[in-house]
Image (cartoon, rainbow, N blue to C red):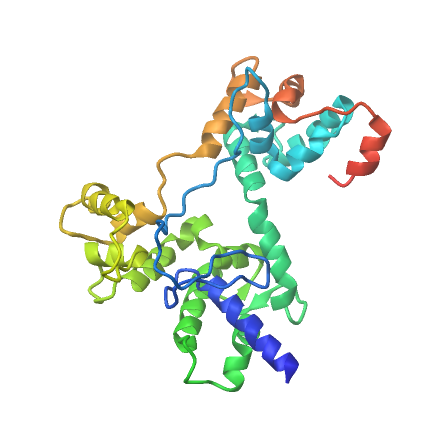
Length: 339
């Protein structure tokens, strides 16, 4: 009985994560998988946003006159940048040249193009996404065949509900299961209802995958479009972020959001947002941080200005790409030989 109750609770929290846009409840629960979200039941006084803006490549100040710490975190990711700080110059250069550069050179032509450099930076920044997929993989790949079928995902996530459907729950599990299946099918690019790790990543983190953008917009509009007309009007837009109880004065940010809706969200000034306008709102694409950093690193290291980098050019400017501080070579190798 205890095991059944635990499985039921685990299933409910997992559902809430994967149906991340569902606003059936005021707040989400803390996932048992370690994915943190906020829970609460009071009227929000601070702005709650659906916008999936790109996280900065680093929280550090980008000032190469002082140091290259920003570039290190952008190029390696925060965790690996810290690891490289403890390496001596010899080992730092060795790993940069023999491991990283070789991995960046996808077409094996002996050069690193700006596009390859940008893709490497994006990959380093998305490591937390890969880690979350790895962390959850074993829970859903029940038969251990290296794939997660829709049936496996459904049974693990909704197992307790499928065994004994309940009508007195505050969650509409049939609707949530239907939305999950629809998203799973979109993520499943080859249509076999079996997700490999790339497809499962698209399912868990649809906002990070180009072919999933339509489903992100669709789910968002379904959540906010209360009158079902296929658009998001101003009342629905504000109501998704703020609900007045008539007793407290409206926060200033609400008035600001009304202005944002009129001046920027509703681009054709028809009083509502369609799918394209909703896409521009929740998945803005104004600035590509990885592309900007790739151009910067290319400018710093491309000695002959031919628009591509050789391994020698990168190693000659290794301090721009990776950090290095310690001098105890042997100790550093023992601590960080896992890279």
